[in-house]
Length: 267
Image (tube, rainbow, N blue to C red):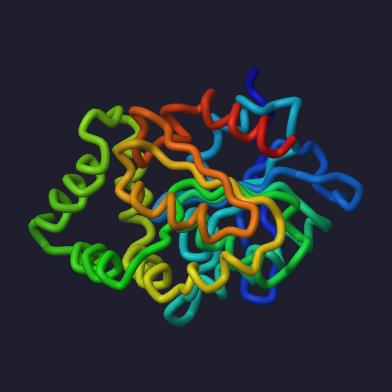
């Protein structure tokens, strides 16, 4: 069943945030608990359209674009995870969301932890898909492979970026790879800035403070697979699930499985 996914903008203290939703009239959510979906770098809320369709009729879904990505405002200075979380919390508050089921993938997982940490009780339960629970050595290794997008007259900057995206999952469908490639190009300077925001985020310090149940999941071939066990162990009420055969694009390629994880954990 395909949900009628709608798009909208909401004003925050920082700028306008763009979002996708399956809610027909997102004017007053004060008496309901929606599912909020936070995306990875350098994607946008479009990565959740298949999942929103899979959960049609079961959850009222809201998927915002992180500042600097998709159609949301671009931060005027170097962003932090705290800035992302507060801007998105502002957006959700403006939509009258008082509590939610919270799901974050990669960078979205960092933002979800920050949001739950800063606003206790806002997340009823939390699913972290590939959370960047990184050691110092892992941060350095990942940072060494993140480079700003610097356009060149001959287009030589395009192939390395394409190879990096395809390299995450060598058998990734062409349409999905092309979507992520164009979104990354559109993000420009925000692409590298978001990764550095993740590297500067102390997820390990914040996660143990979160009182709600936390489910950590990730694909067998996800670059952040090694982060799953320590993240689950750090949570007060943590559980963990490894998804065989899955990688970075688990939400798009193993949609039915992720939808089932959401149904079971959030209910």
